[in-house]
Image (cartoon, rainbow, N blue to C red; front, side, top):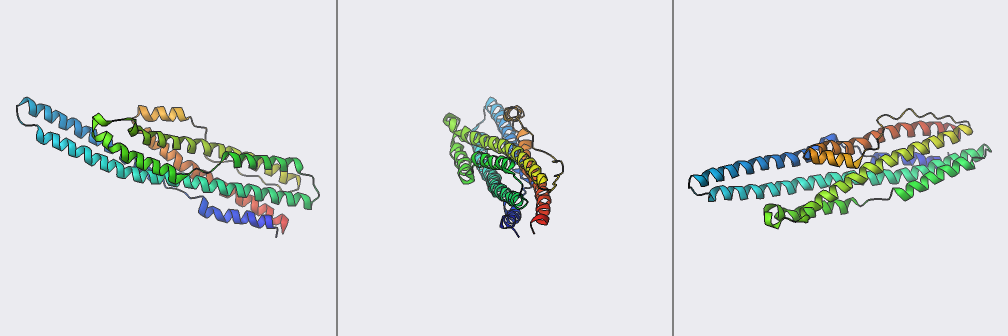
Length: 283
């Protein structure tokens, strides 16, 4: 058996580790973050109304103010804990992006080498399509560099922790409280855009590979891609998230979870079809 084909099969086996499906249940984390904000705002309004009514009657408002301070502290602690879970979710999203992209580069190279061996064995000049495959692989290598999931998760956790005092003390509010949001939406941005580009590049590679294989007598017809990743607008998603006070962001997280899951399912099916055809030619 061809060493290149054996490497392709090894790439397929490695997807059990690299192509991790993530449950849509993770949307509970951002949902709880938003609901906690809504609940604390309602409580604060209720306490402030109570303070006004108590003050107008001439009674002491010290108890209500202490209660409000306690609520703010409890809210800040709860938000910090939720942010840890949220950061862990983003860590997993970024890590599976990295592992899948790395596996894909190995797969591109091994498929290219296998096709080259088959063409040489049959005495067919496939230099042009092979050059096209090589360019696609090198473009992917340049564009799909690894992102550090630990770094970005740490930024979210520590920035959120540092911004807690700013939230509790209005006079101390500063731009530091916005750091977690900037980091979060930047992660959203590159996850959304890079998965789209990755899938389009993969479709081009597989089409080019299918044409090359057809010239050597191997006909591979991948099924139509189900649930393709669309080119979503980051600006539209961000505006909708702001306008809906964060609730659209729950759907945004669902998209970041489900798009790669659908991508993995389809890719596994196509890879199995291609390897089955190649195995029959290189034994």
